[in-house]
Image (cartoon, rainbow, N blue to C red; front, top):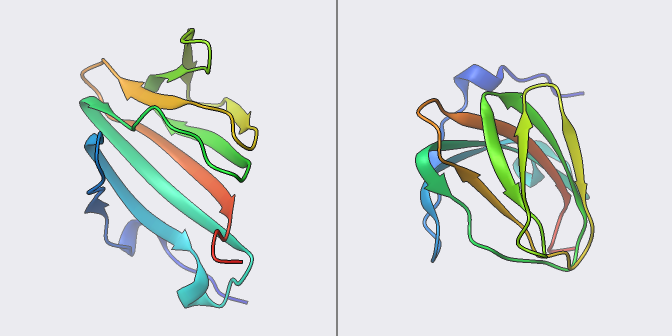
Amino acid sequence: MIVKNNGDMPEAPVKEEKVKNVLMKILIGPDDGSHNIIMRHFKVLSEGHSPFHSHPHEHVVKIEKGKGIVVRETGEEVLVSQGQSLLIEENETHQFKNPFSEPFEFICTILNPEK
């Protein structure tokens, strides 16, 4: 068993095309011996966003702090906030945005894409 303090783990800017003002840290992943799943913490700063994208694996998201916008495949924008959870299906196009002044934080758990 591995027990880690989330606050002690370093976060780094996400350096991908079409990403703005997003920080990420791996809470549990391959470096911890987790071969099949990866749990990540994202912090979307004010005016930040992920790309409008899809991928071949589903993932679950738990909103940890603040509020933000999730953009659905159709372009519909849905307000989400602390205490809510999401399932994003495989190949479902989506985006996370933060038009607000406070950070928007969420946990995202995915299957290890290298498996």
